[in-house]
Image: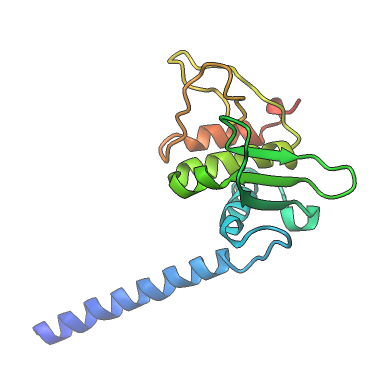
Length: 167
């Protein structure tokens, strides 16, 4: 095989990989959520996708849940779920937190607030034996250590979407 043919095969394989990956990404970002700031859309979609992986169907757009990024003036509060009687529930994420938070921290707080707003979960301050929080639904007052990382978030999400975690 000549170097030219080898380069063509490698280039073609690379192109196929790029096209395939691009399709998946565009599918994930096609859904719109009325009343939700665009920066939050991918997290709302991921909340639905993670539920679907666990056999649970969630449609936040149909539920009418809204969301915004704005200044929260309560000390130490980075997210809220406003339960409304006259309108759908509304997630608020603190603007200062959002500006500096990692992707995992953003995901965790949005999933926590959607746990309140959509799943109707209360707080759970249980601790693991090592002092880490046992639930993504921790209150922040229970003395556990947040440890939501790429390597362990599946266990937190399993707990979030489980029937046992419902109050």
